[in-house]
Image (cartoon, rainbow, N blue to C red; front, side, top):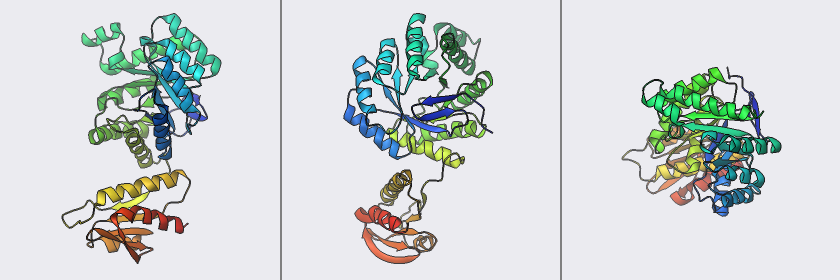
Length: 356
């Protein structure tokens, strides 16, 4: 059973309050490159991303965010650190939400200024806490062994929450991320006990694609199965699109999203004489895009050789069976034609659409 939380509106999206778990990612394009940012937003949205975060290190970047928002299909979050004026500029530019750590933007009056401006515009705030941003007293207690990492993170987050709630500001989402899976689990379980704010869950600084995907899948899978978590980000040292795809698969595996492309593909072996990994990846990405557009997806098989290929083809709507530098294409179990590696993914999509 999902944990009961406050409902927060981020643009047209609801986070918490029983709404579906949303997927987030963050731009790695330059904060002043509007064209590159728009391209990343659209690419991630096509894969199922619900919320997109942009860093706003200065007032000029806030203006760029405003430009990106004009053509963004999904809500945007301004990521703010240190300079509260960047938060005010992002609010003025029309951001859908702020992500900040109230502890690193200065004095209480600056936090108050941001909270008041956000409240006036009905813009929610995500409090983002991690080990690198702990306040000095909590860091000293942690270093002295008086508290552990989960307790330090939760105290920090709830302290920042109080700063906002003292201003009558309640549209708050909380994240308190660790890079260790077990500490992440303990931290979010404590938060779930101590606040009704929606929780943004993830493992911070999780690493490159494979270890990062595994660490996030373990932590998020456990927390979400316990009903903890209203929105997620799979942090990876990789392109934002990779984060979205891993996040979507985690939700699908738990039955929290509609099933994605049903692709059967073999692990390859020495008999394979086509670039199966590349073709299978192309087919998967193309089908993800079709799914986002509401197209009912077929069952697809992408196999590397004749050992299992023809058999799998009989059970798939559309199938590719690898040969020597080319594929045999099957539709509903019947061989249709031969296709080159370059044309294989396109032909699968062409026949998939013909089956609608």
